[in-house]
Amino acid sequence: MFKWDKLIINATIATMAEGSHDYGMIKDGAIGILNGRIEWLGTTAGIANSIDSLAKELIDAQGCLVTPGLIDCHTHLVFAGNRCDEFEQRLNGVAYEEIARNGGGILSTVRATREASFDELYQQSLPRFEALMSEGVTTVEIKSGYGLDFENELKMLKVAKKLGKEHGIDVKTTLLAAHAVPPEYKDNPDAYVDIVCTQIIPKIAELKMTDCVDAFCEGIGFSYEQTKRVFDAAARWGLPVKLHADQLSDLNGAELVAEYSGLSADHVEYTSLKSVKAMAKAGTVAVLLPYAFYILKETQLPPIAAFRKHHVPIAVSTDCNPGTAPSSSLLTTMNKACIEFSLTPEEVLKGVTINAAMALGIEDETGSIEFGKKAHLVLWNCKSPADLSYWQGMNRVQRVFN
Ligand SMILES: [Zn+2]
Image 1 (cartoon, rainbow, N blue to C red):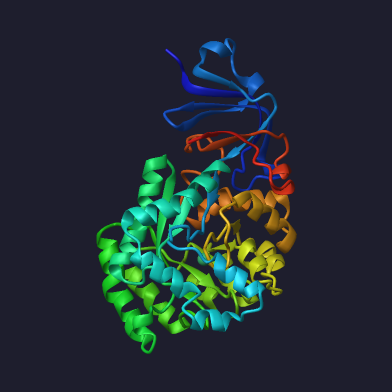
Image 2: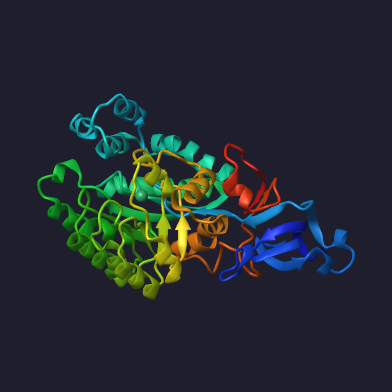
C-alpha cells in the first residue's frame, strides 16, 4: 500500500502561507498528495527512507519552483461577440461617445451575449478559459453582467459552471446583474434596480447559481444608493458581496462594501484613506486590476501605501473582459501589477494565490501550500518565483496538479 498518490521531491516550494515572509519558501521541499489533498509538506531530506515506495507516482522537480495553483479572482470571461473593431476605430481617432452612439461599447456585448445560444456562448468563452488554464490557473471567478435580464444572466452563470465542470477547475460564480443599465430601462434605471433586487437576485439565489453578488458603483454605472439596495437584497439571500468600486471616481464604494463585510473592493484607484481603514477593519480584500488601468491609460494610482500600512490584503486579477481588459493572461497581468502599481513580485504572487483566495472566501481550502488544503499546485520551468512576474511571453508551466 502506498502512503500517497503523488510525491513531489526536490522542489523549491513557494508555499505562500498566510502571514509568511519570503514566499513561505521551502528549499529542497517535498509534498505528499493523497485524494487531492496536501497530506505531507516538508523537506525532501525530512522524508523517511525508501522514497520510491511511498507514492504511486514520484515526481522529481529537480530544483524547480512549485507554487499554489494560480487564482484569477475577477473575470468577465463569459461573453459573446468581439470588439476588436472598436479598438481599431478608437486608434483611428473615433471618439468613444461616437462608438457608443453607433451601438458599440458594453451594450454591443450585451446584444451579442443575449443573441448567443448556450452552446455558442460556451464555445466563444472556452478559448479564454483554456488560455487561463494553460498558465497554471486552477480557480477562476466568473461574473455574469452581459445578460442584464434573468434568463440571460442565468445562461451566463450556467456557461461559467459548465466550463469549470468540464475541465475539473474550481469556478466561483458572481451575479453582476447591476453591471450596466439595459437599453430597455435606459430612462428608468431605478426600475431596473427593482428588477435586480426583487426578481433576478432571489431567482438566481434559489437556483444556487451564484456564490456572490457584485455591482458597478460609478457615475456611468449605479449610484451609492442603488448599490446599497442591491447589497441589501444580497444580504436577504445570505449572499456575500463584492464591488467594482472607485475605479473612475470616489463614490465611497469601497467603504460601502466594507460596511457589508464584503469579500473585496475591486479597482479602487480613487479609494480614500477613510475607505481603506474601513476595508482593513472588515477584512475586505483590495483587488487590483492593472490591465484595465493600462488599457484606459489611467493615471490615478490605487492607494497602495495605505493598503500596506493598514494591512489590507491585496489581490491581483486579469479583469478579462472585451472592453477595458482584453486579456486572458494572468502572467502578463502579474508583470503589469509590478510595473504599473510598483507591487513587489512577492506581493503579486500573494495577489494571485492566498489573497485572491481570500477575495473569494475560499482561503481555508486553497491559495497556499499547507497541510490539509487542496493540492492545487503548479510546477514551473524556473527556480525563482520572481521569474513569473519578470519575463514576458514565456509560459513556464511544466505541470499543473488539481
Ligand atoms: Zn470587472
